[in-house]
Image (cartoon, rainbow, N blue to C red; front, side, top):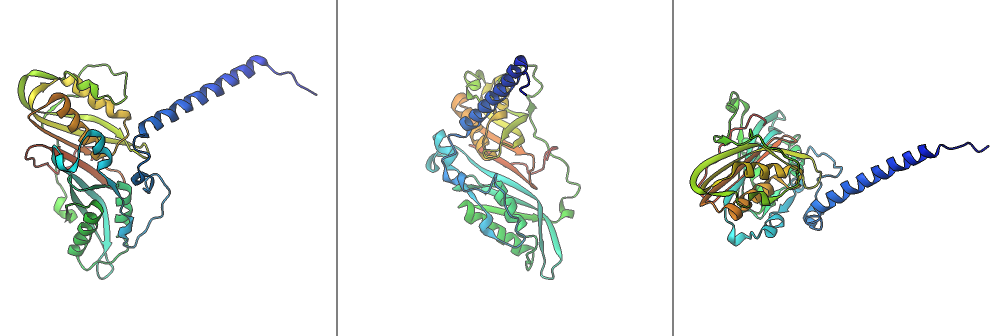
Length: 315
């Protein structure tokens, strides 16, 4: 027996399915558009990031993976012989443990400073997997652990790396730090577009010459591979034409759906500010919240600068 079919109900179902399909197609197109300039790079296709991985608890430095800094710098017109900045990537290692010579577990908080002039940045998931490989590995003493970290990270980054290890009682009670400067986040503005747009900085430089530090806690970008959110605070210290604070805030917020690694975002901010606003002196320093027991804190500057290493309230 053939049952009657409600034609209007069928039409409704078709509309829903069509709408969902179009929404999915639009979403996929958006992701492909964001990723298209990076995806062909073999340095990304070979990463373990975004793929199922096994966890090793025996020392294995082959787990470390590098990403060439040139991948992001060359599209910005930045090359090793003409970098307009010095800088570093400061990593905090909150989940670092190994065994001493008698098999007793040791724990430490580590700090790694990777020179911005290194050929490569270090991919964070591979860094986490590498650190996990220390968990059931015996080392003679803390010095051997530090030296091992330094040597392996230098080889991966192809550049200068400094490592420090801290016993927990050395940093217990350390106060939460803050970025000293004027916070631009409380402006009464309306935002409707969250696509990255450097054009917000066009005509953002005024006539008055100033020297000031501006801070925002609204920096949010997304992992280049997994699209997971990266939350950060950014400090911009400059000497030059006064920056329009509304334009700067709109620019920072426009990173909200942008896909790039932490280090690349900071270099993009530095490069865009120099290009559009032409300050005489500029420092950009961002501190991101931790993921997988690691936080990344890149800074770039065209003047001598000593970054504070205290964690911020969200770290």
